Image (tube, rainbow, N blue to C red; front, side, top):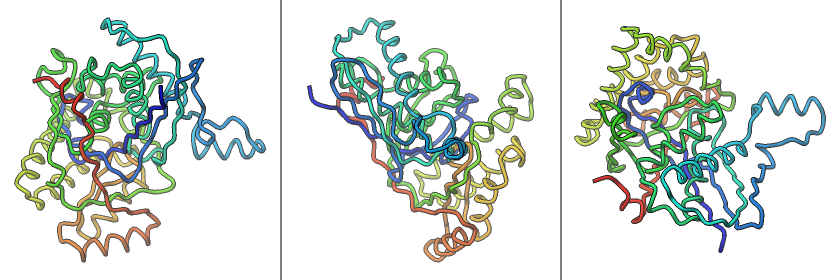
Length: 351
């Protein structure tokens, strides 16, 4: 059996985030700017290869170790591969999906910047899941709608707090509208996912920094307040979810002036709920750099990067690039990844 390799791309939340964690709605897209890849090689023993950079355990000195921990954190991607292997095996066992007894070696690579809210961890897990589906030849037995749950379950095993929207965008590829409201989550175990034509999108830009804040802390107090029935949080989160519903209509009608307003509203509502201290000065500054020249902007995820849109076109885009350069931020045009579903995947979709 030959080696299997899959690449999964970074994700940008366009509208509705973070309401996916609160039974809301979102629109997200996969972008070709950054990616993670996983390679599965048949092997006599089952091996998980650590990445030479992201899973570094050999240091030049104590200062080197501390510098590495400060910039990259304590955890690499090898643990993600371990987690998805366990979750995949457990799912197959619970659903009476027979797996052959051959072994493999897994390795990964990624260029998704850390802590930028671009779903770097889930990209690794999703790529590994694709490798496992093909290695065991069970892609046709695991529904596409269920796969984001498996990716999320693997991350939850490691204490990573997140929602489904990132994993849905990375499993499906392209531009996806997601509805987590109603009884679908309870009855089906997943939301209702609708791929959209990515050509409906106007030109978008990604703004990020080499020194991002920790995106994981953003959900902390709001989540507990929501669980406690805080009316302020519940009503504002519903407003955030409705932005995705309005955004779907705006995209289909190519009403980009409305899209710009919705993007701004999304960030403003988030800021109202989470507060400036929780969002972080650098994250807020990235949004304000775009707002300064009349562009719309919001977080791509929980912080660390921003998606921006210039409704006035090329002249405004030039100003945005200049302002980002002055502020020391990196800016790139966003390239959308087309839908990644193949014929076998489409056959598993619920009618």
